[in-house]
Every structure is written in C-alpha cells, then in structure tokens.
Image (tube, rainbow, N blue to C red):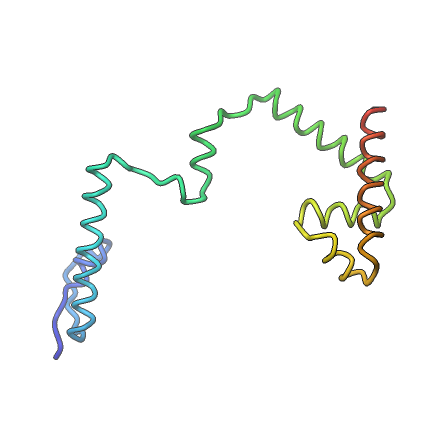
Length: 140
C-alpha cells in the first residue's frame, strides 16, 4: 500500500510542499525516526546536555584546555625545529624506525617484519637513536 508524504516536513530546506508516494513501511520508518529525534531533543533539553564530549571533534580539548599564547606557540615551534634538526643528524634507518614506532604506532616486531630483520636490531637502533637525540638536544 502506498502512502503520500510531504518532503517539506522531512527536509526543511524545501520551500514548497512536495508530495511523493512511498511504501507504508518507509513511511512508518520515517515517522519512527521523527519520533526518536523529538525524544532525543526533549531528553537533551531536560538534562541540559547541549553537546557531547564524545564527538571527537576537539570540543573536549577546547573545554578543558586554555588556548596557547603566542609565546607558547613560538616555543613549541622552536622545540619542533630543534627536534627536526637533531633527527637530521641521525642515520636514516634510525629515523625511519623511530618514526614508525612513535608516530605510526607500529610495534618493533612489525617494523622488523616489514624490513625482514631481527626484532632486536630494530629495538637497539631505536634505543641508540633516542640516546643520540637526547645527547644532541642537551648540547643545543
């Protein structure tokens, strides 16, 4: 059985009434969606929950942390530049392994498998690279 629905009620950007025929099941689903949406809006209003901290759009960071001052941003940039300069002084393999482990989140075993070498070699090169970075950054 077909039921006529007004698209203007579903899509608020329509300026005029547009009637279409849809199956009864589709109309029922649209009605249920509208009821669920209304219930959610009412629940949000009653609980004064106007936004969610679980959206992963950075709102929780903004709410919890203060904006960094221009001086702090400049210091962060300088620290990053020092780190990049120090990384350029390391052998390329060490840098690649440090990057893969700490930035990409790869395990040392996964890095070893991808390079087809022993895991202890990867572990030692990362440890040596970090010690060398520490030494370089202390000098500067």
